Image (cartoon, rainbow, N blue to C red; front, top):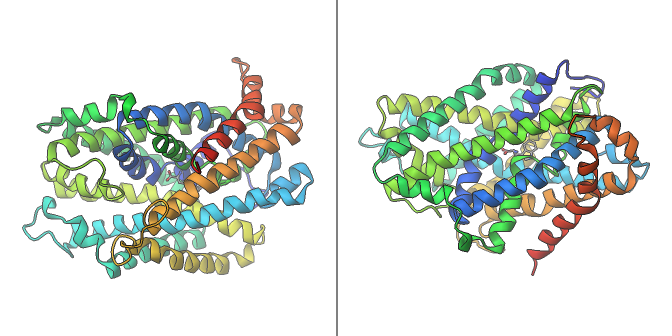
Length: 442
Ligand code: TRP
């Protein structure tokens, strides 16, 4: 899409931005983070941050995009006449690049699981889903590198062919179908013997489970699911016309992300309790638990296969936008370079994603900072680059942009949201982000 193009309707805008924002964050990352940082306590912190910090920040990014109407490594200069502020856009670009690097690891796992369910390439000896062994699949370096290579290749081909539009249309039925599948899994999980403990674990906020680390990761999780600070949402809004209301879009994206996160939690935790897994399994959690749940269903293998395809689709609509963001910042609306840049960017992403993959096999012994190489890439993006990017934008919006101009693009509404929102962005959220940011280094 070039600079001049615009969404024809608000629905198109919502579908595209939701497709980009709803992905592995809610379905894969939320349950494993909640498992590590206290279940219900984490859910509560995540909800508070998502509604009181994430939602206003998302409205801010949409407003900035609508005002600036250009790619994100230029938009800050265009709005403030200060060239050095483009660094906020570059920070976002860097975040998106590293994010794609570890995102593709999980995308690769989905592909390997799909191939495994279809052709039983690895374990699966007694022909039941329950015998799929996460460790023996993900512990195989070549297999996982191949999986993520396929994931990156698929993303690249879609971006090169420019068929994102078709995918947006497909997301109209793929996403609702994914919802339905999640609900089926929730019902199945809850019907398992011993599931109640798991339900309690994810729904009951036990205050003693709240830790400083948990607070940090809950904030990071809100940023991650809502794509904040990566300038992704700014880009989507830069294609929105003046009349489009950004508030409805922001509220629907936040609502859908919360809904999918909670459904994922309700699908996973009861099953964890029923099958005796440990909630603190980490990134492999979903991949270990779900085959067991489907194993208990009639036609489980078929259903699991369809679920994985839908899951892959949700991951791809996000990865496409990750690659697209990098490509559009370098093509600068000159589409002749598009294909070449998409290829270079994909090769670079593939290279940086290899150490991330190997964090689960040959390089698992390398531990520092936040954990493995994979954990550190995630930490760098979710807890450093994304908050920094969002902080930069709050400062630009609160201190440099014209209030009336902001108001025009924010739009009016019967709740008179503009003033509370504006003061939140101008005075409160920058302080909140700085405090939490500083706290992690103490
Ligand atoms: N929100 C996405 C998810 O939950 C991840 C993400 C963060 C993202 N920033 C992005 C996706 C920018 C696309 C573009 O899966």
